[in-house]
Length: 501
Image (cartoon, rainbow, N blue to C red; front, side):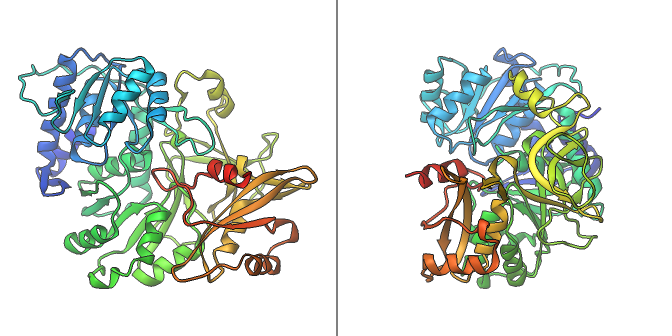
């Protein structure tokens, strides 16, 4: 039975007791983590939470997040992870949509969540992981009777994950126990040489990438060092202290590591691989990371609707920079034209995927579900991609981000890769803006490397030497930083607003 409530119990039975979570000065064994999770289950059942009720969790990474996720699912509830960095209106939108019966927070999210609950017109039970005189304290002593676990089925919902909303209002992606369990097993089956060890929990547990990493870690019998937030120095310290061989990150984190002058102060020789996902990782960044740390960057691809991993590079296979590796075990893919006809190898079209990891759809949005899921179980990802003769997948761009200038398609990532090879440019993002004459024009936003000065006309001239004329941006804007969401994805919707000013 592929249900997530098995994961921690199976871990204890298979590996015995060992240090599982390192949270600051606190260390929790796997057995203690199971006990704490069962306590959360009993608390929720005693509070009247029923199977199928939604339980919202909005905290930075900490051990309690893991316990609450497990405990809520043990009670038959559906976990709704919410980034604690979201604003009050965003949280209120999610609360109105999900209608949670219970909420778990800490000091960092207390005021926003209480305000959002009021805005949404809801009054859920609220517990805080930090002592508070306004809501119940999670660790307040209480004798809760041991709850009888409900009979869970593989098709029962485990999580509703609200998409980041980089291009529109967030929708709740429904993920079943089978979706999440199967995807973790697909990742493990695709990398049979994985060993037990210590990894870094730098990805938010409120994001599907971080959620899956924690599940995979438990299945492998490994341990996690929990980070409240990404801090380069603390990452280096943890790699040195725990002899970390690999961890998962997003490109913005890799960039911070490459740029940090602290690296030479630590022994980072244990590091062998870093798995990168959630956003495209530019080839120049991959090359710079590998040159500095002598560790391979294993770029992969996924999306929330696929729970999330679809493809990735593997240590036992050649790495093809610019691609996102090969499909994980148990996932099918096809590249189709805009009429849904399958295209030959090497042709660019929309990526469709299918497998046990694919979501049943969006919460309370049947029409939106029909737009992305067909009757044969294919998920229409909205990503423009191609597969080569060796089965390596290349994500060309988001279908909705493609710029059509005078009838010619411009894929922003092509232009961004060229701009980032300019010696003065650190990061680049390209968006389309309306044009009365050509339909759309490309506008580029760039940041400068430390100590560098960007000459806009010189950079555009550089682009004209490399790019087809229609791909050269109409304008180049230098900014201090690109707008990003909580997991490092560039907010292109915000850039389009900037471009229109």
